[in-house]
Each structure stands twice: as structure tokens, then as C-alpha cells.
Length: 312
Image (cartoon, rainbow, N blue to C red; front, side, top):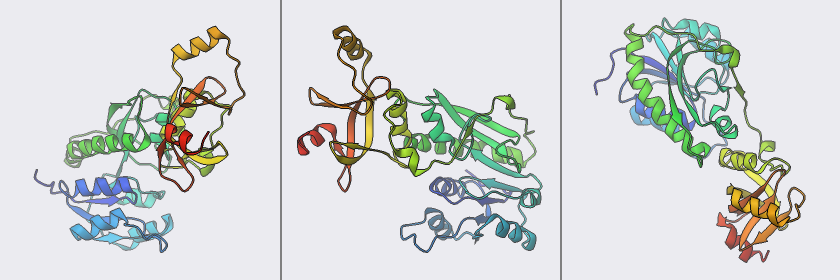
């Protein structure tokens, strides 16, 4: 596919940004990349820098939103459009206004649903049946800008944040390749987000979110395990061992009905039950069957291997 003749400036820092930038180099002229500098303590590969070096792209590394504003006050760029994917800094109004066509953000939700820092995890946590990608013109306010387009994507029942992210990156790339050239050529009129009064908001997750609260319903804890599998990870104590639960399922309705029929005594939330080589935990509503877990300092293992190895 021939590259568009209109250059763009790319803003992005995280792993999703690196995947998007690698794709965009095939379809667009990238005048410059604006990204965070690699932290001194970060010894692993920094994916965006790898793409910059591989394609010999011009890059700038502001360390704050004020440095970013200063860069655009002092530097002359030719691009009429900026593009943000997974950047991490708030972009001040003077930088937005620098671009004749503004700055487009590829936001991984169906705006105005899940504005904010972590729309992917919150779609899973909420049990949403679908999510999507919105190409939006950024404004100084949080994810309120006009839309170029948006497209939905079904969320599978076993979806995790990493797997859903991969699907959304692919969808985002499709939309960027299909709609950015049209917008650059004047073929798209941005339109307001539908029903802004129904907006919902995500937030940045913290390490404390990963501590399993067994008083919650089993269904909610199962969603958290899938949403938190990369960060902050779902942590608890089982058989006196610190573990990270990596896969679980809610006890089937059939077994739940059987327990009620037999009038099996309900335990306190957090009580561990071992039946038929299954590791289950009582929650505030229902039992959660632990399928895979990772004890501290060990590799991930099945619940059966954990039961055998730790003689539970």
C-alpha cells in the first residue's frame, strides 16, 4: 500500500504505541516521534525506541507536559495532524492548537463509555459484552473530543486484558489506515460523541487492586483475575502460601444447585475447600474454582499440582 503524502507526528511511549508505530511506518510519513525517554533503571528493551532506531525516525523525548509544550514553542514542524496512541502525558492546549487538523487519539473503548486511563481492564471488570476503538480529536478535557469514527468488538467470556489489547491494537490499526488519510484529505467531518451524559470513567489501577477480596461475588473475582493478569495481578494466601491466581472459573450452576439441595453448610468468605482434586474458595456469593496459580518464587502451575506439591 502506498504511503500517504501528508506527514504526521506520532505521540506514544508504551508497548501498544510501539505496535501501532511499527504499523504506521508502512502507511504514513512519520515526521517525528514524541515519546518518553527510557528511564535509567529500565534495562529491558524499550519497544518504541527500537522502532525509532530501526526506521531511523526523528524523535524527541520531553520528560513532562511542560517540556512538551516548550518543544512545540521552539520547533518548526510541517505536519498538519498529530496522532496519540498510548502516550502517558497530558497534552497542553498550545500543542493541540499547533496542528491545523488537531491531534487524533486512538482510544480503546466505545466513547463516551470508559473514558480515562484504563478502558480495556474496566470493560472486562464490568462484564461488558463488547468494546471497541474510537478515533477522537483530543481536547484539554478528558476524552470528550469529537469522533472521526468508532468500531465495536465483541469480548469473549475468557478474555484477558492482554488478549483483548491485542485484538484492539489490530482494530485500531485498521481504522487508522482507513480513516486518517480520509481525514487528512478533508473527507471526514468529526462529530460529537453520542449521549455524553452516559459517560463512564476508568482509572489507573494500583497494586492494592490486586489483593483479592473474598467477600466479593465469585463472578466479580473471576473478572478481576482476567483483568489484572498482567498488572497488578490477583494475589492471596492459600494453604499458608502467597500466590497469584492466574486462571479461575465460577462454580457451575449445576453444582451450586446440588449444594443447596443437599443443604451443604456455607463457609465464610475465603474458606478453602478441596473436593475431587479441585481447589475452590468460598466467596461472598458462590464458589470460585482455582484452575491455575503461581506461588511466590515459583512458576505457574495447575491447581492439582499445587495441591499435590504443597500437600493441601
